Amino acid sequence: MSPLDTARLLPWSSTDGKPCYLAGDGTGYVSRMADTMEAAQLNSAATLLKEAHRILEGRRWTSGEIHLLAVELTESLTDVHRVAESRGARLPAPDYDRPGTDDDADTDEPRLPAEAFG
Image (cartoon, rainbow, N blue to C red; front, side):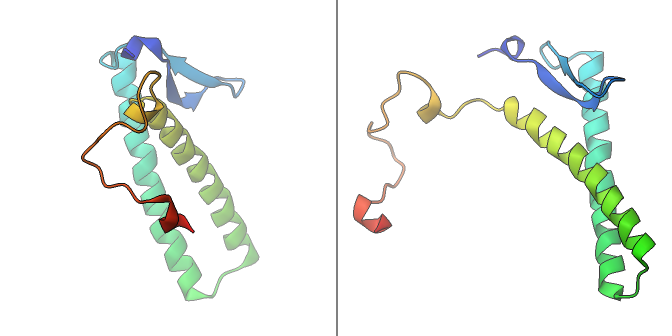
């Protein structure tokens, strides 16, 4: 499957909240802009997680602080989920998922007998 066969889910939504997609080979200006935005979203999530741990470990917070933290974590998780969806959709399918491959073919991978699973 070529990169042009699948559209990339972009890390932003349209003005009416719908997902935005990009068809291309992943090397253009919009792809680079999306890569930069994904990196910023992931960095922001990491920073927010540290802050959440700090707030929760202190065990001295107001209901307003917890509410704000929940709002920010929800927004960040939404961004990170979109990045994961986008990147996962662009991964090549494993051989065992491709049509015409034999699941019982000899491989160098270890296999457990059925009895191992009870």
